[in-house]
Each structure stands twice: as structure tokens, then as C-alpha cells.
Image (spheres, rainbow, N blue to C red):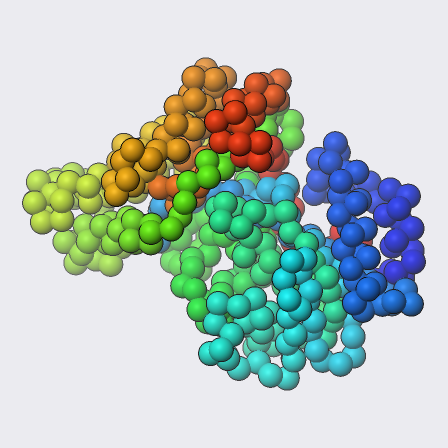
Length: 428
């Protein structure tokens, strides 16, 4: 913890370059200083008008799914990464046992550390996330206590970059450093975040989003046992690859797509049920192929195709992780393209059959192929059907690529990102 005035001076004089270098691209330092100064000013207005408190700065990244599209819900393999868009906070301990968090653009959330039962009227609200995190910290034997914080986020809501998981990891990171000397490890923080979202917020999410946000970097996750996922951080310096990660928002609407997302999982599980199993991870691919006709007759051909996509994605995740570990980025990109084609052809989550004339993701992928063929990689991002695609673009082609995407989908359609090597951190 550092005095408010000293932190303010460091930000104004751009004296945190060493700290920022851990999580931000150097060319973005100026904008990060401005962001933290704005959040610091918000903290002053709400909690410290006299500028006398000791404060700390925190950051938690969003995440991107890189490999393993629609595999985690059937206990498959996923390759994910923490990204350079993040949620940040200025926070200070208090001795009231009350947590107050004011996020830019949202009402103040207030939670008492002595009232930690699930509250039904908080379902779906950020207040429930905070309460659940504190409850889980306490149940696991960690220290909890009051603090005041102001936050702001660059992680786009509804973009597949996991703004909710970034917020959860940010809250955990503040509790971790303010009251536990940073001793709670990133995997535990991810599990605490998931618990809060499942039990208190009321959303039955998996662990992928929170794990990628908390661990950072490239991370391979094996969900064979969802209670004990196997996490492997991949040693690859994306900053030296010569590429940037572009997320393109095609502006397609997610409304009316709940049944489409649910059908991917239910059809995979239907195939598993044919063999008396709950999820595809418990079934061998050879058995699905040997019974393809009977499966198609009972569940439809699409269910079989989606099952084959599941197995292919698991195989590709292993190959992608191996390629990165060996520093073979060309092979990695070829696997990204193959993964995207599997999503398109087998998993069929690039557009919805409800509105076949509306195919913004398909258009974005087609134009990406025209520009990047032989030079980069492209694929659907996240759940699909609408929303975003992902592309790995050579740095010397960024202007050409983003210009083309903006011309089609609007000036705010393209986000140039990096894979950030750290998850939730105390900046200073």
C-alpha cells in the first residue's frame, strides 16, 4: 500500500513503466496512465477527498478462447489466453468490515463481510459476485476484510472476452493482496470466482473463463475432471511473434440464440447417452464412427458432426500447445485455421439456420481469408452464431486488415490485442 499522493505523483510523472511492462504493450502506456488517473480521481471523490489514505492499484485481464471451441461443456480440452484488455481498480482497506466497489458506469455495490449467505434478490447482480467471493475466501480459511474500491474495464461486454470473469478475478485479486499477502494462487482464485458465479450469481458457468483470466498467458486446460481441471501454462512469448491478435465485432445480435448454444451441448451429450455416458469425453471417437449411422438415425446427422468436431478440437488443442512450446508459430496458425473450419463445417456455429441470410461472421471469416491466406490465421471466436471472430495478423498488415474490417462492420469493430503473460495482479 502506498499513500494516495505518492501514487498520484507516480501516475502523473509516468513513473510506473516497470510495473506496466508486465501487463501492457509499451505503446499503450500513456493511455494506461490516464485510465488509472481517472479511476484514482473517482476514488478520491467517493472515498478520500483529503487524499490521506493508503491505496493500491490492481488489474485483471479479459480472456480469449484460442483452441477447443465448444469442448469444455463435454469435459474436453481448451487452449485460452489472457489478453491486454483489462479491468483495473484503485483500492484501500477499511476497518468497517464493509466492501464498497464503484465500477464506472454502474451503481455502488456494498457488501458486509458478516452477511455472507446467498441472497435470492441479488441473483444476476454484481453484488452477489462480491458476496460469493468473500464467502468462499472465508470458507477456505483465507482472511477477509473491508475495502473501498473504484474500478473501470476495457473488457467488452458481450464480446466473448469474459468481462464478468475479469471482474470476478479483479475482486479476488484485491482481497488476495489487501488481506492475504498475495498467497492465494491463480488456480484457486479461478475456482473461487467460478463458485461465486455458480452459487451466488446463479449462472452455471464452467471454469474456462475464470482460469484464463486468473492465470494469464497461454494456458491449456483439461476438463476431464471438472472438479480438478489440469492446467498447464504454455511458455511462449507472444510479444516476439511478430503478430497481433485481432478481435472483430461483427455486430450480430445474440438475442434469440439461447437455444442454439444449448443445442450444441445437448446434441453432443445425446451422442454420449447412446453409449450410456454423460459427456463425450467418456466415449471413444472410434465408437462414434463405428455407430455413425445409428446415431444419425436417432439424433440427426448434425449431432454426429458435432461429436466429431469435439474429438478433432481436443486433438488440435494438444497440437497447438505443442507448437507454441516449440516456438513453431506457423504450425500453430495452421491449426487455428483448421479449428475454425471444423467449427464452420462440423460444429456449425458460425450462423444460425433461423436467419440464413444474416451471416456477418461468415463474411468476416471470408474476408479474413482473402487478406490473410498464407500469412495469418482466422476462426470464429467464443460461442459463435453471432458476435466476434478472431484473427492472428502480421504486425505489418494490421492497418490493412483492420481497415477492411472497419469498412464492413464500422469504425469500432476491430480490437488489436496481445496475449498478456500475467493474470490478476497488484500493479503497485
